[in-house]
Length: 107
Image 1 (cartoon, helix red, strand yellow):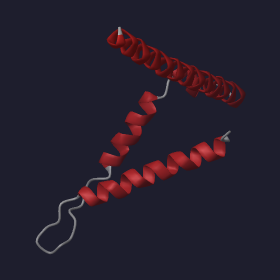
Image 2 (spheres, rainbow, N blue to C red):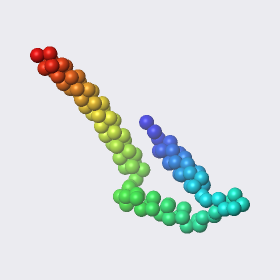
Image 3 (cartoon, rainbow, N blue to C red):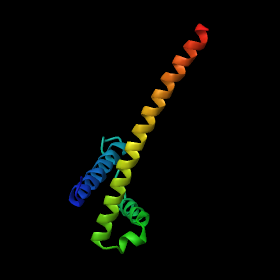
Image 4 (cartoon, rainbow, N blue to C red):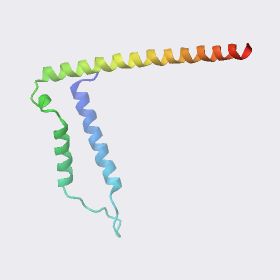
């Protein structure tokens, strides 16, 4: 299970990767130098990210946020388990159908 520090670190790494990818996409001028972009672009991205955070979460306590995170992790575990169960059931049904089709062909 990840701690909040681990999650923060992963988020920072993701932002750094995006920033690195953004540098690769910059166009080079005749001298081989990248064109400069305004700092406002990064500011706008940060504002958009903050807008995506629900106001309820922004005003929640750390304990509430941790509780929500644990609930979401539990829900994910349950859904993964259910997905595996259904995938197995689907495979079993496909085998039964295949066997029944072979029986029909033999008759």
